[in-house]
Length: 607
Image (cartoon, rainbow, N blue to C red; front, side):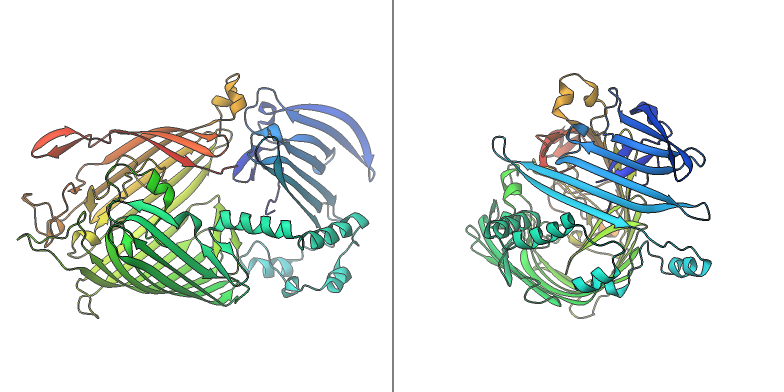
């Protein structure tokens, strides 16, 4: 419903799918055009044209009609539909209708725009569940005086909302609405209000919410996440977990979350609790306190709500996940200065304990009881013209056609509290979705950072490996857990989705609507002597020995792959080859690395 269609652009970004406009410079590659009629509208000659997708076009395209003012060559009106055969998943029909008006100063401006969406999810057999949505915006009395324009530009926001928009008063809206609701529109209001009270609808709404958010909500509390109730790994054996979080019906100011887990093999309890205090909703201001005692893999993002995941357990390779017990306490404050500038600052105390698969040994063979540090954190996130959706507690970044830059700073000083180390860790991350219609889009993620100071290997940059058959977009598919570590590093993840540009032109195969993907992932880093824990290396200088199999990354690591997505609309299969570091040392002998080639599976609910 955020779609703002500008048909003067060559491509319209809808659901992050680039669809060529009928007025595109190269529109004849995608459309066939027909001159239907010439009319006299408001005393001005107007051409009426019909357009339909060319039989040679493999990318999504519209079908419809438009009226063009002959003198200004401006769009007077356009009605464009995207039907089920367009290749956009789940969308049975999308209709966009725009009417423009010519103002007294000869400027063409919106008069009305309408959007209708009919989305469907197929069930067993021929049954399906449909979701229909419509939006109509009317523009009246547009004004472009200099004082008004400057005042709006000073807000640095694409839309400036009056406080009255939050009113839920039907009489108020009826008084300011420029056009009264039609009988049909009023009927829709009444129907929606009545349907919301039907028990079947309420049950379906809860199930949809559970599958999208992971929790089954009762009135004041939700239970979940459902995919973490049961899982298993080599360290814990069978892991049972149950969690909860309060809902907005209990409070829109605070949310309490917690979980408890138990491993049947290690016979240890784990768990965590966190509290969020909403100081402001828009712009968002939030204070978060959290504590966690759980088994987590180093070198990957800490899981927000426990570590169990039944899908990862099923798709794990032999040997399971290498994890360490961690005590983690943090307090953070999130401040949204503007929609394009967000800041998070906080303090974190983390204590890491050794495990039988991840030992922490001194050069003399004695074991560390734990590694503890206290660090101050600052995150700055910069974006431009980004679509953001907001809930009561959560904010989700949807899409920006510009690069998104995130700066992370972490610092610790030995002796502050029980802090055992002094270091400074700056990190820069750039994420960019490059739209390259009609041949799909590229997703680019670049990360660079360094660690200033002497630290043991659990505090180094441990590259994100993947010892499962599951697709993990931010991990190296052919790299083992704990295989490489650096104190200065750069990583690059590039993935291009052609969205069926090639397969869509092959007879019979194009009916499957498969999409082809290529990817490249690379990493490079250096390691100072003082942080080198490779026993036997002439540059060894760390106080802690690296685990068996961990090495420095003194030459670039590169892997590349191809994938097929949109299998039955929800599945994806990747084949990835390891291009460098194809051999490893075992007992002083170089042998082929077992992960030279891997196949990963995943679910992708893309449009």
